[in-house]
Image (cartoon, rainbow, N blue to C red; front, side):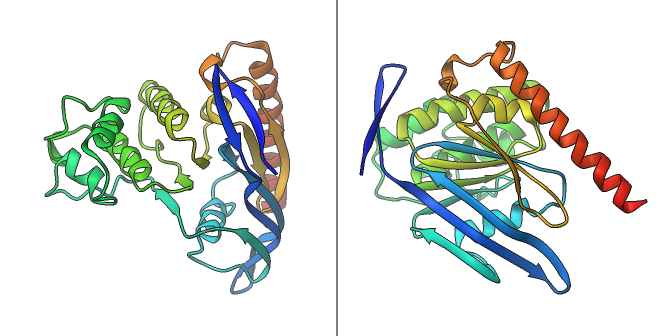
Length: 256
């Protein structure tokens, strides 16, 4: 059953859940990485995943993508049209910006390709090669390429990790703009609370050793209207810091 949601004057028609994980377990030899993990990825929403380093976030994304299988539990949903954006851009060095974006969907129109290039702020660089671009520009090209793939769900594994704070915030804005145009479901893994606050319709906090869902926080403010100084976001940030600090103390105590 479909329902409608109005965001900033734009009508978004949403279906049911895009992906549903129930009771997912994953072991590597004797180590339990994921334990009884339950998570629903909604259609046309951005789900941000926060958690400590090494907690299993990348393993979780690989299960969502169908790259690896869980040892127990179920993953329900269509994984045939899934895009993946990695921490590194993985552009082809012998292809231009335009060609790198087009290569994943050669049927894409010139209008669509130039629209993607414009949204990510590379409209004066479409004929440049990766070696001629900054790190942030290469990552913007990578994001445009992922959206040209026309995936129904896009998995992003800390794509802005290597960038400084100001550039990350610019990348967040570019991602919001491009998501508003194509409305994919996005799963965005990050260590940065501010990225999650600005992007997520839902923020999922994971635990470590083993990884499971500790907290899910919904944010109802439209992404383009968010300000990190808003009282609601300040309160959510405080809550997230408290949860993550508690996790860190608990892990330190176990390791002692």
